[in-house]
Length: 205
Figure 1 (cartoon, one colour):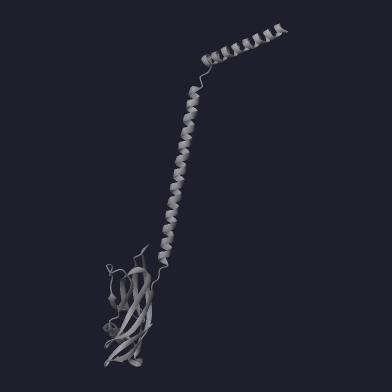
Figure 2: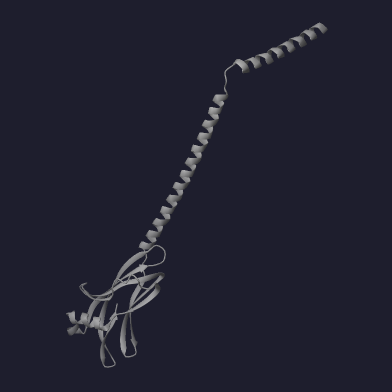
């Protein structure tokens, strides 16, 4: 029994020694995998860098798309911009004054204002290409009485009915946010009215 145990221990010891010697021989004389391991490590690093580059490109592309989308929304919003405009007629002292009144929630510049005949022909430039006009949120522009006299003289109905038709055309530029130009036209009917022994015109539009 003791001999069997000793034999078993010797066998195990011999096996361990053989294993150690075999491992050392393999490491010393077997193939060298260190180069392959370094190459694999370099490949993994290269793939990681490529993935990070792709991630950054996707993030930049998404940012550009978002900026383009915001810019498009601003352009669409600007295209829908339309100030409120009306003609007001009031007595100021001994004058009956007609004004083009423009109001907007967004600040703007009044670029041009013209008086048109009922056929659309330009009769008088009240303001012309004033790109340096002040920035305002509301503006009242007086329609000159002599210009209305010119329009009345060209009207086929004034001398028969003491009234005539015409229009005020105006162009304004939005100064807040995305710039936008808007051109509008207000048609009106002018009727004669007396004030201070003078014939004036009262515009209704």
